[in-house]
Amino acid sequence: MTPTGTFRPVIEVSGIRKTYGDIVAVSDISFTVGEGEIFGLIGPNGAGKTTTMECVEGVRRPDRGVISILGLDPFRDVYKLQNLIGVQLQQAQLQKRIKVWEAVDLWASLYTKTVDGDRLLDQLGLTSKRNAWFMTLSGGQKQRLFIALALINDPEVVFLDELTTGLDPQSRRAIWELVRGIRDRGKTVFMTTHLMEEAERLCDRVAIIEHGKIIDIGSPEELVARHCPARTVVLATLNVLAEESLHRVPSVETITRQDSRLTIQGCGDDFVTEVIGCLSENQIRVTDFRTVLPTLEDVFLKLTGHSIRD
Amino acid sequence: MFRGLFKLTWLEIKIFLREPMGAFGSIFFPVLVFVGVGRFLGGRIRPGLPSAAGFVGVGLPVLASVLISLSGVLSLVTIISIYREGGILKRLRATPLRPQTILTAHVLVKLTLTVVTMALMVAAGKRYYPVNVDIPVFSFALALLISTWSILSIGFLIASIVPTARFAQPIGAAILYPMLALCGLFVPLAALPPALHRVARALPLTYAVSLLEGIWKGEAWSAHLGDVAALVFVFAICTALSAKVFRWE
Image (cartoon, rainbow over all chains, first blue to last red; front, side, top):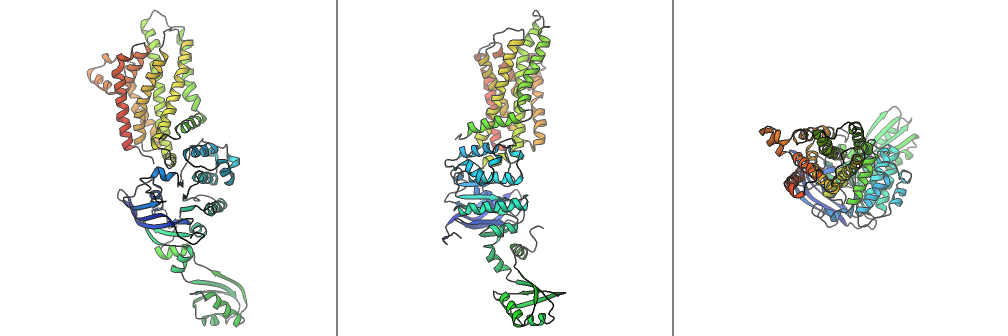
C-alpha cells in the first residue's frame, strides 16, 4: 500500500450504521484505510458511499459504530479534525459571484497551517481564472477549484466524493493525474466513484459497496483475480485446424468461433502462455491476437448480478 | 470561535453588491424614491396642517425604515435558502467555519446595508424635506439596529423551515408584510377593535414601530424599555427555535 510496504491505518471504520427515517443508508460497514494510499468506495448511486464518507468527515454522525481518523473521533473532535483533512463534497457549489482568488483566500484564512494559494492555483491550471466568478467556470474548472480548496491546508487525508461525475473524458483524465499527484506527495486519498474505470485506474484498493454493505475489499487486481479468474484470448486465423489444436490445451475451457475469429476462454496464470505455445507449435498463422482481461465492471456484475449502471 | 467572520462578512457584502440589482435595488432605489416623493410633496405640504406634518415628520421616516428592514429580512431569507439549495451552506460548514459564524456574517451584511441605506435617507431627508426637526440620528440608528436584528431572527426562523428557495420570498413576504397593517403606523393602536388590538400586541413589528417612532420624536430610551424587552424576547425565542430546526441541506 505505502511505498515502503508497511500498512499504517489512518482511517478505521467499524460497524457503522446510518438510517434516514425508514431508509437504511448504511447498514453495517467496516474498513481500514492505510497511510498514503488511494482508497475508493465504489458502487451505484444510492449505495451509501456518500453517507459513509460524510460520517468519516464528521459531517454526519452514524447511529452506531466506531470511526477513528488520524486517532480522532470525527464527530467529537470535528474542529480539530478539520485542520487535518481536506474535503471535496459531491455537487457542492460556491457563491455564484465569488471570485476564484477570494474563495482560496477565505479558505486560507480559516486554517492554522496553509500552503501558498497562488502556487496551488498555478498547479491546478487556474491562474488565468484567478479573477473569474465561480458561476463562469466550466465543470472541470469548478472541480479543480474544489480540489484547490481541499488542499489549501496541506491536509493529511483528502476526501473526494464523485470527483469527476459530469466531466468530459479529457478533464477527467487531467483530474486523475492531479489525484495521483496528491498521493505522490504522501497524502492519503479517500474517494468515492461509480465509475469502474476511474476506480481501476486510480485506486490502490477499493471497497465494493451495495445496499449499505461492503461486498468485498481489495486492490482492483486482487478483486479481479478472486472473482473473475477467467481469461479470454481473441484471435483471428484462417487455419481450420486451429480450433481442434487449441482444444487440446489443458487450461482452455471454451472456444467459440465466429467466421475466422476464435474467442478462447480459460483459467490459470499459464493460460495465455499455453495458447501462444500451442499456436507456435502447430505453426498456426494468426492475423490478430489480443487478450481480454476482466475488469472491476465484470467483478461488480459477478458479485451483484447486475451492472453498476442499472 | 468566530475565525473568518470579518472576512466572510466582507466577502458576502462584495458578492451582494455584484448582483445585478444588488446595490441599486437595495440601497439607491429606496433613497431615490424617497427623494422623488419628497420633492413632489415637499413644496405642497402646508406647515399649518398638523396631520400632514405628523406623517411626513414621523410616520414616513419610520415606515421607510421598517420597509428597508423588512426587505433586508426577506433578502436574508432568500439568500439562506438559495445557499442551502445550492449546497453552499454545506460546503462552508465542512470547513473550520463555525455554523454561527456563517449565519452571523449574513446578519451583519443585512445590518450594514440597512444602516447605509438609512444614513443616505436621513441625509436626503434633511436636504429635501421641509420638516426641520432635530433627529437623534445615533439613537435612531441604534433603535433601527435593534429592530432589524430582532426581525432578522424571525427571518432566520422562516429560512429554517421554507422547503425550497422558490418559496422563500413569497412565504417570507406573506408572513412579514401583513404585520405592517397592524403595527400602528397606519391606524393608531388605540383605534383598533379589541380583538385586533390583541393581535397587534402579539406582533413584534408593533414594538419595533413604537420604538422607532418614539426615538425619532426624541423620546427617552427609558420610555421604551418595554419595546426593547419585547424585541429582545422575540430575538431569543426565534434564535432558539432556529437553532433547533435549522437545516443545512
